[in-house]
Length: 330
Length: 258
Image 1 (tube, each protein chain N blue to C red):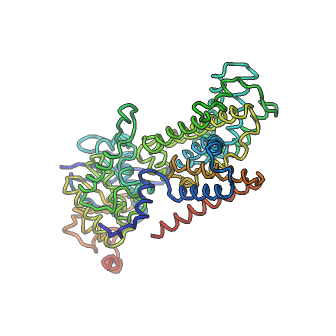
Image 2: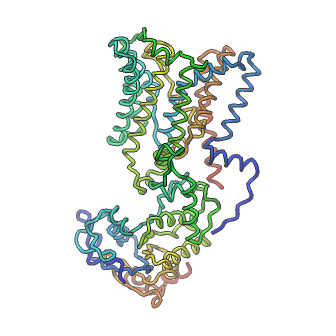
Image 3: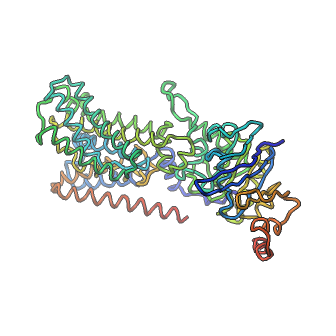
């Protein structure tokens, strides 16, 4: 049964190691480096510590959403409601803190809880009502956004307590709080996805539901947990955004799912599940962050930035599918 | 010693009778071929053994115990494993992940956080399991989907072995394999037998069945129509039993040509 495989070249071995041990794709790292180099050449403001922190700060919200997208897509699902749920969560938190006047800790809980409930409903509908994830989460995209507008009466809720604002604007040791929270979340998420049974089962489930079921994994329950987790992370993203802009904005996070899913796909997540890594997604999120930051520094209108993100998403999936087809031909 | 013994198993789905009283016995370490035309009831019979279906009437004894009322999980714990034709593998995951899917060994991260998968231990045990089968894989850390059909079959068998089965049921293990690979899968079956594990081999490839089994049971119209000792039968007889008599020379000659 031993089949003779050709001795892989150096590049192939480095690639394999990076994929198997570190769970990242070298191509995405290369794109990040090239993109950063290009931006540095084009704009004199790009290479500076303050701009670097700016990029990380702007990436933190999207990055947390991208972590959620990675888990869901890696499990063979899809969550289009990320941006709307993030908006709803931010409004819920601001409503609790400002309109109800409750202590800040309840506002934090409200953000996470609102997101979790939305995600839990997604999970229930996907696994019990047999409505495809695409439709369920598309519906939730509308539901959550509408509810956010209802709660806030269509206006941003201002006047958040200082503790909440600190979460968004505080800078312990000069590092923005959202960046710290984002990085910690990423570390935990990476550990969970790559090294725990839960994470391995998530990918196995996205790879082959039949294999996961045959292995005794409670497939439906696992999916419900994944969608709830996704909602909770969207809630966290909502908290970070609301705290940073110091307002519960019902229009926050519009189109953010687009960027988050793009970041996950660029990072090497298989669109159809089974392969995903948080480290890869972080690189993907940074690519999106650098792209947006660079285009802003170059004074490119934000309309064009939207177009760029959409194009990058299609391009990333195209390259991924191209590679999959190439591999399956071997 | 009889390991598995089915007596007068009946199973119907609504108005459709699939099994009309099947008798079947398998001894420990015996390789039994189960053949029959499409629709003869092979899959249904196997699923009543693994517990996915419950027989309407009849008795099933395994290892001296009546298992008729047991669910698939309980039967698996007693030592019944089934390898389906699709192998139920997660193709993008590596060998060890597939072998231990759902039962990954864990350790404490930094001696503190429990529940972290012990990948080193997993890889070590997986390699040992592959070695035990006398098989070779290009790399244990590659995704299973990059392997050939026979190599994937090896992983599926290694996975089954981790449950310490007494009986392994294999559904068309050689159906989609390259010629060279068929032999290695048949060798794997012989290896299981040499370890005292009984095998039920469901296959349409009669040459494979004739070369690896001790007995051949022919299922026809929901009955065990014939129970042949492999050493004392031949292609003609098996084919004629499958199609139910008549002039089977042409069909047998066709099978013989392979």
